[in-house]
Image (cartoon, rainbow, N blue to C red; front, side, top):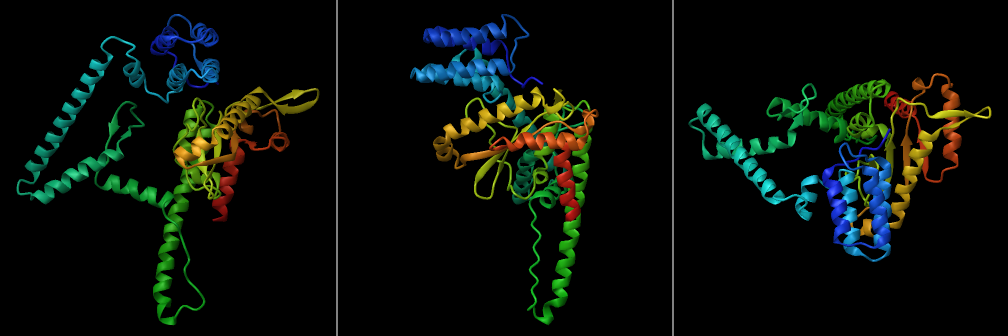
Length: 391
């Protein structure tokens, strides 16, 4: 499946402007290759080839110590990978006449609309509680603004959004606490005094109740993820969305998601997990609904889909190694000898190969990779299910 990239008129005009501002003949030839790949009219071609061409051009400019061209090409690369937003690119380089005024007007109208929302909400509160004290008004406004963090898209009607307040917001908060922010500890010891036995038992019963609630939530999440994985129409984005909300599935060896996928220009993995020692472990997600092995001379071997995913991950790890000092200084993350897992395929989508044979092929293949492991979504789900059963 082609990687998601932005390839539009804004990017094409920007690449032409980079050439216009002045680059070496070598860098210009690489940018010309990128322009030819995109094409002269919409729909413009993007994908991995475009990203690679821009990366080559950026490396060439950097090797020539052309810092201005290198920065511009890095911005083009960031824009093509949806890291730099289109308005920022248009405003920074004035690609279209009147861009700054247009976006300024957009900001002004947004602030005006927000003001209307604010006043409407305040008038409604004043109508419902005409005798409210200043403290009560401040409390209402504080709750109104805090509710902005709960804005989410309506799954049943994309493009429509909702903001949770009151009981629904509390339910969402409680779910997050039970799922990700509650640690169960047994502080009972043999030497606890007898007069504390009754209260200790009550506390333990409450802890057991909370733990069961947490297990139920995780069990439901695992079932939902299983449905997404087994859906023949699920995309990489669907899988990433489901997994990013349930990082416990990767096991207890990781603390949380890094929340910063792009540590090096032009490279990113789908999920970056943090180990207890502060180092990271990347996760590259590919589709589940595809075949991942092929037959060659009577043997079963990984196919091109697997090789491509591993190659992409290797490039990412190499980029981390080469840029370690900067990443450690800017982000406080140690990427020395970082590892990664590639998750791809599912036995259900290649029924002509036995699951045990498929697993054996990937295990053998991974044994020849120093820092990368390749597993299927079924292996990931089975491991999470065993952890829940053990709990």
